[in-house]
Image 1 (tube, protein in one colour):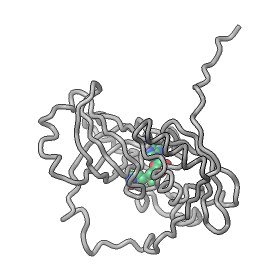
Image 2 (image 1 turned 45 degrees about the horizontal axis):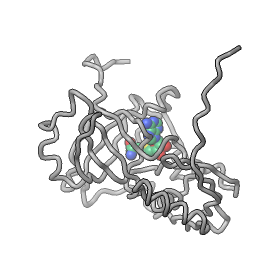
Image 3 (image 1 turned 180 degrees about the vertical axis):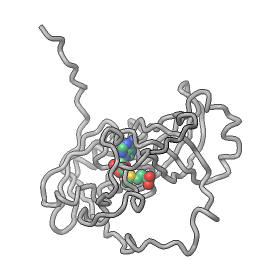
Length: 246
Ligand code: SAM
């Protein structure tokens, strides 16, 4: 195996996102426009001069490492969930995290830039990344050339029917209160993430699922009529710290 031989990739920053676990994250960017987050660029990559002109673009490419897939290595073939988990395709014909070098790319809407004690912050929306994902590059999205009008995709040509999402009144009230207190649009993010049907293809049998958005636990199930019913929302418990032995 030939190795790169150049200097190792530098982590230029980290993502801050609502997603602290993989389950429930949209499978591609822009599927959930309410998935807002921050790309926090750290020194020495946080200089204002390095992003001069970036605000002229509505979207940017976030180039990152699938760090939470590295321990599992890579596979020559994968079963994309979008193909129902039945059909295998080559890893290079997929967007799987389990790929050589574990590099990922997501086009995100750029909402604005600011500065925090941690570094330079790019506010983004429509993201599909775990909280803490390491960033290795940022580039502007160029609609004229990144989106050729004759581009086609014979795998995923059929439109996906989104799930209908329902929530009982207490869940609606929780979301309203949460938005008043945090400014986070939990209601819309929940709707968008569940509409994409986060369930693995092998577990579409009416069982109950749990997922987390920010510091909120959500329980839901999906009926045979493709209705995702939110069963409950609650704050995460305080983290349990291990007791020292003896
Ligand atoms: N848009 C990117 C791409 O095409 O390279 C990512 C697509 S990949 C199918 C998106 C999924 O990767 C998410 O739904 C989540 O399950 C997983 N994921 C996100 N961040 C990750 C991370 N830091 N490490 C491992 N897996 C991650």
